[in-house]
Length: 305
Image (cartoon, rainbow, N blue to C red; front, side, top):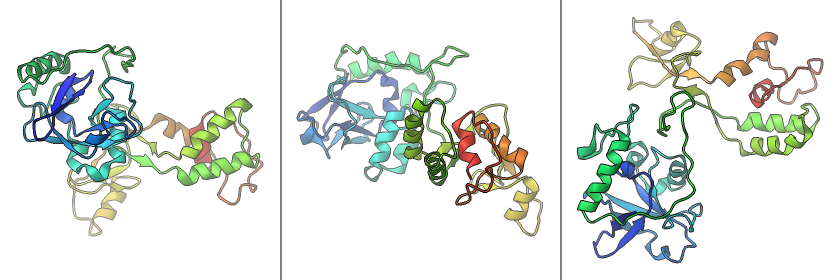
């Protein structure tokens, strides 16, 4: 547990964490607004335990479990999915820097972490605890029985969540079309008991992340002259150059190194085969002669364009 003192330095809160090495990317604390222990602290700020020039706001979020740990979450949006979701819900109380501040790089070493920069994340863990003890900011350990770790199936290493810029597709309108197709019987879900699950998923209307950071695959067709420029989405570099500079002045464009999601590539097979969408919005009955097997939801969404 980590002891975080109030800005005045007179009181402190105990925060439980399994990842003390990510303290350097913390941007806030979160408590449940129904937790009587902490409701009086909501809206106040606490001093970061290792960085004297940083204070953290205390946010009220109903997703915080009052019976987990000390009931207080440290929010590290760049290295935790739950923390990112909470931070996004309170974006008006945070800065853009809070969403980009990272302390672990792609090699698993600490960055932007003062004296700990360059250390392996797991080596740094015990050293961070030692420093907390030296600063009298360490509250000891407590039982913690429920923890899930994502492990790479290829290397066996623990996966490090990292916030990165990605390409997304807005699926809201496509989801509506797919839902309407299910309601009208144009799309049959087999087995039938899976239909409520599919409809529930479609009703969420979450954007589809299309980009992957892999060494192989179909590169995303986006180009730009330098890292400070906006991306130009085009069929190829020649078309992108024409969009970027109509005078066709010689400019070298770089293509995004990310590749498309494999499921996205395979989902467009029916569109490529038939040369058009199987069904169009408002004209669902015009191509009823086409019957094909939708082996996954991605194909359904793109097929009903």
